[in-house]
Image (cartoon, rainbow, N blue to C red; front, top):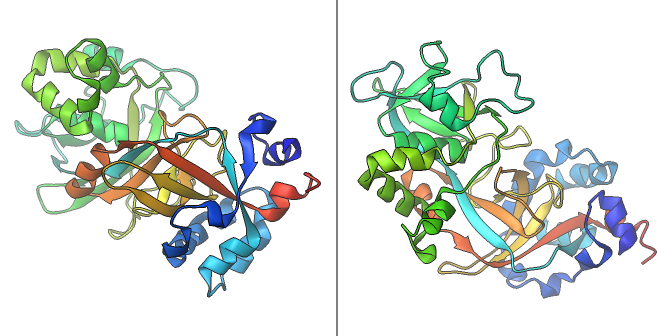
Length: 332
């Protein structure tokens, strides 16, 4: 499998890439392969490797989605399970285009002196020193500082303005400081048990402890800037790392150092609501690192947020690679 690894351009060991059969994928036969194919079509033309180009052309006219994947792809287990699955979503929050007594917490555009490269000021410096305040960089104002923080964690959102309009916000840049988990810090301090950590639990703790909570949020030095997505239709998901909308329950955020963006990925998630499904790697995330690490996009709005915030499950993820890419140089 050394040649397979070289063909992928991945930095995993020869033992870290294991070919599998479709029969080895639990639940494969009962999935909605047509839904997965529709999601794959959304971004397949953006995959830079030439091995994918003919598959993208074929995908446009496929009528039997399951046969398409089984005929032209090879399941490959990259890395060692168990995987870690979490969930993300697109928040939908009440807000205002101007500051009011109710809406007093800003969402910022990228400052012009920062091009998104290198490391800019930390969250603590930005907030405590007011580095962005009063510069006309405010895109919208929110009523809850905790939701403003989690909007940055999610990287996109819908702001329902007071006049009924909906402002779509997308990722513009980040200050490139490392992401530090607020949940892990609460556990380290003894303020929350490991099994109790969830987005809902963190929000509740911060709201119960506003002063300590504000300082806790600054433990994460990473800070995200946004841009208005005026051309994004209401029925479209937020724009992922490939520059196109992601699809609820079919799009996955992965570590592109191990999983090619645009590739189909079979996931077997355990937990309270097991999930066996073919998804597509169309996004990335600051905290998504490793071959067996993925973030599942659950959709938009509060219900999706409630579901995504509970997900922290193990399992397995298997990448589907074009046959030529997987075996042309492998001699198999």
